[in-house]
Length: 330
Image (cartoon, rainbow, N blue to C red; front, side):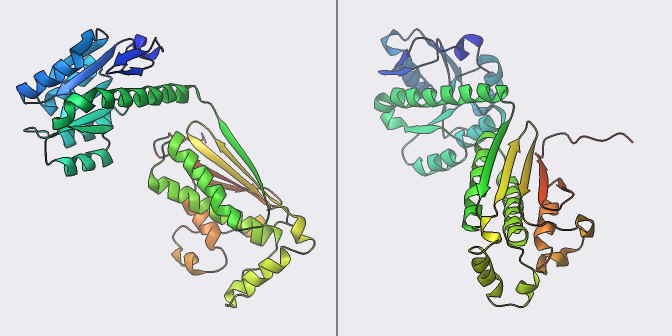
């Protein structure tokens, strides 16, 4: 979208008493069906001989979408109330097709509630039309500064190759939530996973680390759960304080690659016979059994699951939904 000179940090560019670093020229697309309001906005933007600004005008949301590709604006100023495609719909379309172009709403009196909805759906900010003279330029400067940061982050993301986390955990289940939240935060902020994908990764990691702590390091049997009561958790608390269990650790590695994530969980317990593992994706009754429930969830939510020969290390691979799946030749 941006021209090459826009991507190179320049001397600070003045916008309404503020300064926006990183822009030699600032392209503004104004969208409003009211000619009086369009003239007012143009006048505010071009006051004080702001030669670094380039302004284009669209009289409808539909026209604005057509102009976005050719004009390549750094910011869109759009009215809320317009015939045909209104400002809310335009914001949503910009968010879908041009996610790095911020949209600022100009709202008439009484439409603040709609403006809040638009902010929730992707608008960068809004200015009541009655406050244009005092607030428009300041709002524009803040939005452009934030947009420049987002674009720089996007460019940096194109240079990214791999991220790796390593954690060494005591057998304390309260640490599990902190670890999974850390991974989910990274995936949401930098890999842009949706809420459903984040939930699946979180559940699988929780089950894998919990199994490593309880069944691996503490050697707890699922039969204790089947007996009911608190015996299972009481025994877990006891073994955490005695030899040989208390010195064992869980080693967790998260390796984020271009189109997939690798998660490795290793415990220091005796392991188990991996040949006994049986996974039937149609056997949903496994969700109600104390034994095997965690592994069933892991297999369901991850694209590939592997164990080492000793049965004390699990590798889980999660492929992003838009990533191509490799097919092995036969």
